Every structure is written in C-alpha cells, then in structure tokens.
Image 1 (spheres, rainbow, N blue to C red):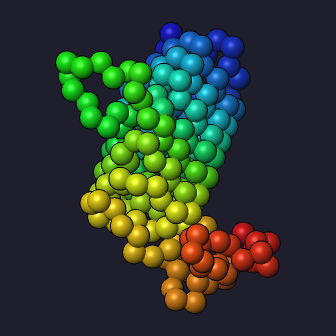
Image 2: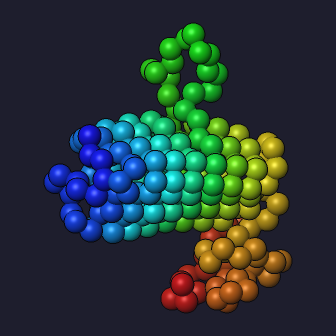
Length: 203
C-alpha cells in the first residue's frame, strides 16, 4: 500500500496526498492528482491528467481514462468504466448490483456500466448499473439514470428523461442545433444526435 507522494514504480509527476492510499498493483498516468482521504484499491488503471477529489473510492479492477475529473465523495465500483474526459460531480452514485441484500452475496452478478467519452454526471445523480452513458451526454444534478443514454443527450429527473441535447462544449442546443459557444452544428436522426462533419474543425 502506498501512502503519500512516494509511489513506488510510478512517475514523480503523479501526486498522491499524504492522507490518501493507493494499493498495489495499480497503473496511474502522469499528471494525475489524488487528493485528501481517497483510496484506490488494487488492479485499477487511471489515465493521465486526472483529478481525483477528496474522499473518493476507486476499484478494485476499475478502468478510468485520461483527463477525467472525479469530484468529492464519489465511489467507482468494480464494473464501472470511464472513458476519456468524463466529469463526475460531487456525491454522484454508481451501483454495480441491481437488487442488493446485505445477507446475500452477489459478487458474481456485477453489471457493467460504461460512461463514454466526454460525458458529464451532475452532483448527486445516480447511475443504475448495467447501462451505457453516451459520449458527451449530460446527466443533470440529482437525476436517476435507469436506461442507456444517447450521445449528447440532456437527461433530468427520476427516472431520468431526455429533455434536449447538449453540445460537445457543454451548451444546451436550441432548435437550430447550433452550439452557442463555438458555432458547431449538429444533426438529429432516429438514432440520436451527431456532430456535423464540416463543423468538426472548430472543436
């Protein structure tokens, strides 16, 4: 178990606060910071330039991509995978069992939850296991996700429902599907929202 900033076998550029614990073995990318009272259990892979906030628990056997930001009081359990650029707001909740009982072991029944590239999960949102959160989807604070979420979808409520679309830059799109921040254009189809090819150079 590694305690503090002296991480055996890890680059010096990885910062671990003296109150945090990182069990071995783990792979942690350059530029990642792990803050107060957090705990990374064994056999996790955490990418480069991630920020792990206070009182975060990760693992075991969890994969987190590059450039992720995990805010305070979040637990990322076995079965959850975050792709690159995912934002997890304070106290958001992941599960890995659909029907837990304290007296019944369900370790062989963990469900996979995949959070795709660039998605945002708001504070106190709950992601019920066994679902995929689409790329650049935006889960509002306090929402309860009980099904797969489309790319770029804006989800609110419990159970969460789509009320609109969000751009790659994190702006709500109007009827014209043009991002008010960078002017990128989107197209809606029966399969969801996609970024128009000609606008990709702006992002």
